[in-house]
Image 1 (cartoon, rainbow, N blue to C red):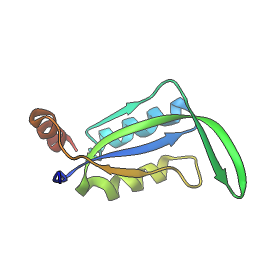
Image 2: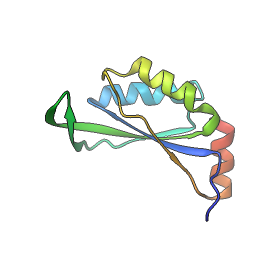
Image 3: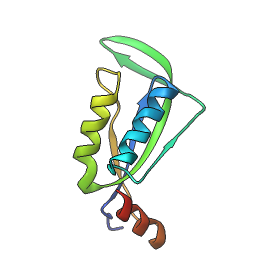
Length: 108
């Protein structure tokens, strides 16, 4: 079984590209994340909200961070996000290149 590193990838979706960029810049500037990728081409999301089937075009953030920064990161995302209940999913990183993980740890 692979060991889990202290590194995490967090998924967040935003309704607009400017909002995605605002969140990305803020969390990197505050060192809550080392890097954020924004999928500039919208993803198509289908979900149930308040009992109704919905669909929307959203921009996906791939946020690279450490386990110790998750709480601060989540607080900042919730503070800046326009959604009532934004997506905030934390995925463990099983492994990666030593150089990249060292850099990630130094910057988040």
